[in-house]
Image 1 (cartoon, rainbow, N blue to C red):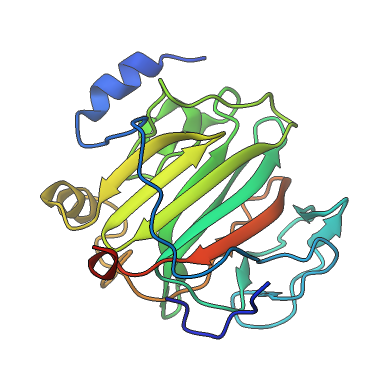
Image 2: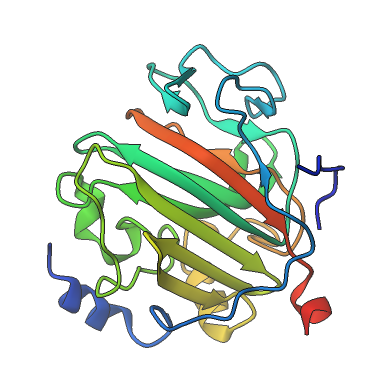
Length: 242
């Protein structure tokens, strides 16, 4: 469901997974989720129309459009969010990052007074050259600080080349995909999820990652990053789909 009206149109992967346990089910073939609409673009390839800063104002000059991509270029660019809100969806995009770079895309976000927007984060990272690459739950493709990606399924392009990514959020199911492979799947209704959130920095966020509308957020983490071909389609709630 979309609240607003939409316009129709390597490292030691084995060791890391061993530490993770069996709570992440990744890599297996997945049935295509039932759609509630067609894919629509979140980015016209030429302007930042449809995007604002977190306060609803015009994007900072630290963001630009270059060669058909949204580029985070400048110091203190600030985060960038969609002016529409989403809860159940299939989001697809391409991204690339510089050497040692760190960024992310957040979804099912909740605004916390005086703190900003919090939500699930699809971590985008140069695993080999950033310190976060040393921790399983903060590597590229992770659900940041909560679940590690399946390193056996994850195949990344060299730094500076575009990768494809996909997020499926439907009911309590969340999936992360990189370059056509599912690298993470979690159930936010599970005891395992609840235990992990309770031990994380998100423990005080009421209804963290709940199935409710929120903007998609492109993260400014003081590094250059590019996003292009951002498309999304609404999905029915899991209960409605079944």
